[in-house]
Image 1 (cartoon, rainbow, N blue to C red):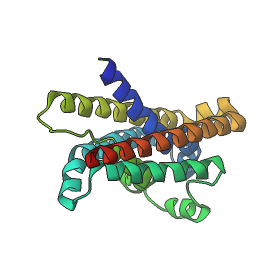
Image 2 (cartoon, rainbow, N blue to C red):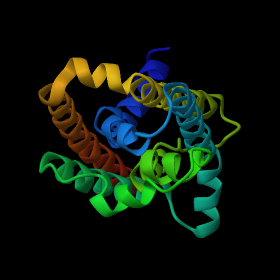
Image 3 (cartoon, rainbow, N blue to C red):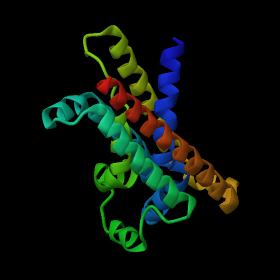
Length: 214
């Protein structure tokens, strides 16, 4: 049970900073500025649901796809960790996740485009995909221990997707209460946690590669 909880929380803490719902909530509000509250709430639910489905599907089939391509899980872990480190560094230096031109372009999309582009790539972009692939458990799928890890990571993905829904659904109320300072503080803390997790994922991949040489 302890291993299950640790794996679940690690998956959640790895995905939450890269999804970064507190920082993306203002973007979501801006993109849905001309939408009724009821439609925005429905859209928030769809984005959270699609985020869970997409990342869970990637988790389940990603390992087999990597084997077909001849790419090992440790290599993906190192690449994903480096990408996380880069994303965290940009966040700490307050670079926006979306450029102004990208925001203006996304304004033209209809609300029924909940999966693309509002889920992919606005919410669950390449960074979230890389993190999910780096969380694919190693070992035979028929091994109960491996299946338990898959379930734990799936629960972590579900928790992260739920935070996306909560922040998007209550974005206007939450942001009004937190204010610009609170929003910026959470964003910076998330960036630092993301930086640490990126280093941890890289180190885990390096250890796995070293063990294969022994």
